[in-house]
Image 1 (tube, rainbow, N blue to C red):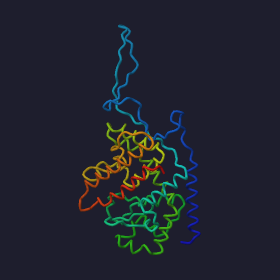
Image 2 (cartoon, rainbow, N blue to C red):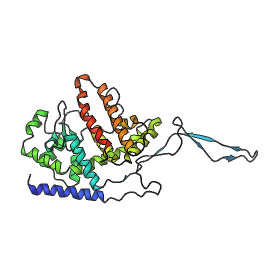
Image 3 (cartoon, helix red, strand yellow):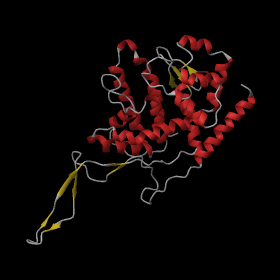
Image 4 (cartoon, rainbow, N blue to C red):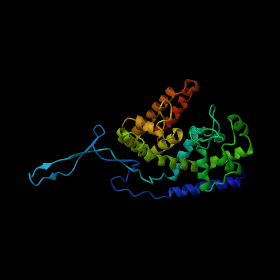
Length: 327
């Protein structure tokens, strides 16, 4: 790819990120101005997940006796802000670079990749899944959505990529892709994906933020307050946005309760449920990392032994340990 094209792509990325950083934050009242409440929970004392509220006494005119009626109602979760506080440009760059390292080891040639024993290509900094045409997308076909996002933000995609966007990944097997790695078109596309890595980080963050309201809605009633509190504790911790965004990109939202192995999924929702009650700051980051590994270890126990998923645990542990260190 010509150097002028690369410079142009970098400029497009910077313009898009600049626009993101200038988005105004939603107005907050004085009691919550120092926090971002991704999920607001009704303030009430919880006893066996039943809220008991005393309503105003009703005066009986004939007896002049006061009767207090108790009203039992379900926990209520207020909607998440439609526009949660935006990450600034420096945080977005840091998140993009860390996800790039997590998924590819910081290697540009891994931005167009195909892992062993998988039936799809892994693309971009988030290793988005890209299935060949006609193949069942077991883990979701996520790369075409990113391509649409890049185009909407002014990135000019190569013609062969635009065509494959609708036809499916142009390689049927890992061997085909590995043979194509040294071709000029694949090398140029890898460079394009590297130059737009921070725009990709914005796409990943937007996806994660959209998932936040659904996390609580998909939680059983008796766990909603627990999940909402843990979500807010992580989100309001320094570096918490990276934790939530990376895990959604890493293992998904976990909204499909019938997915996973033996009826157990391993997404963000399952980690929030697995967490013990925690407080904002380092305790929340440590508890999230610990809970994530418990969920991932359960996945391995429930997996088919022939897949030998245990081999991935050291790498997964290294990744979840990055959540302990504020980015």
